[in-house]
Length: 266
Image (tube, rainbow, N blue to C red; front, side, top):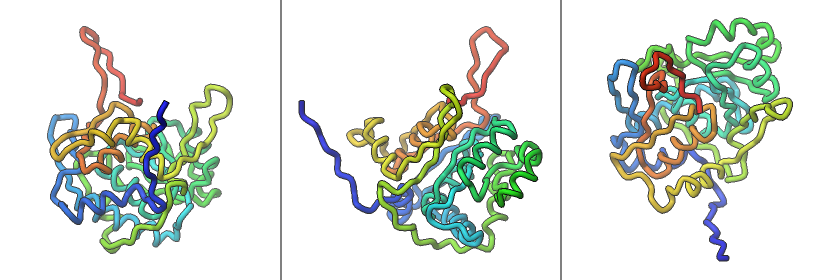
């Protein structure tokens, strides 16, 4: 059996390719968002790069640095894309959280991860308020960057309005941690598992995108929520190849002949 070894760069940050594409073809579509009414909005690589630069500088203003943990509780959206890319650029470790989690779920994950910042949309503030004393004791900053209304970057713009649109991506290696993902807890207490930046390089091979990357105008879409690493990886892998990502607001499965529907989680 022949074992094929794929080249792994000594220095690698997942967010770098978005910067490269933005500089070479900034107007290229990076993300297509469809709301519940079917309205479509497109965001360019330049917009992703600029907004993530500004949010990364906002992280710096909160004295967050390489290796710090940031919990992200956002449904797939432009704001969620910006949040993940800003964290990766900053060398932070992303702790993805499912948006349907209870207050105790959120508290336990934030506590176990040692998160210093929780990013979310304003719809989930009421759940977080239930654990406000615990978050205060843990010195966790809570920062809404999305109003949950879809297509409205106004809240994100307010958060980053004083931040520079220029940011130098932090130097990382494929082994430097990028994600802290918790197991399901099906065999006892849920455990946090660290994944490096090289995780996305592996995903490129797993999804066959090294041999057949998405071309300009082609869309990558998954039913998995970005709180599952597979769902997030689909987006990150597509951006490594210069492709576009499709996200749908409140995407749900509907069974033929049934009035029931279920949210798509993964």
